Image (cartoon, rainbow, N blue to C red):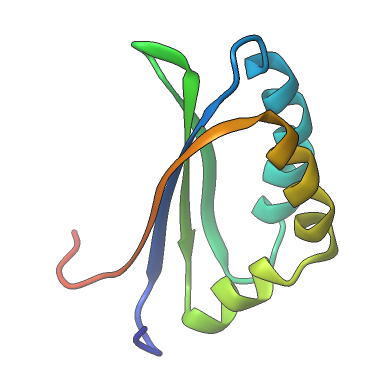
Length: 102
């Protein structure tokens, strides 16, 4: 990853049948806490309009360091096993740095 560029992360997952509400419940405090992190520019949890069991995290950080710090936050360690109880399938993670943006 590149040091002085904004880092954008897209991560998708599909939850087990009947777990969408539980997933949103456990993800809400993580979204709120992450939005307060130094270096976090954007952190959204999006749901697929055609598949209510599919979610995407859209994240934007001011640097590699801010993204690395996010992954080490205590609430992320707490979230991971709770998330695992809900997830049926991980759809992938893409980490990008800006090239040209408005």
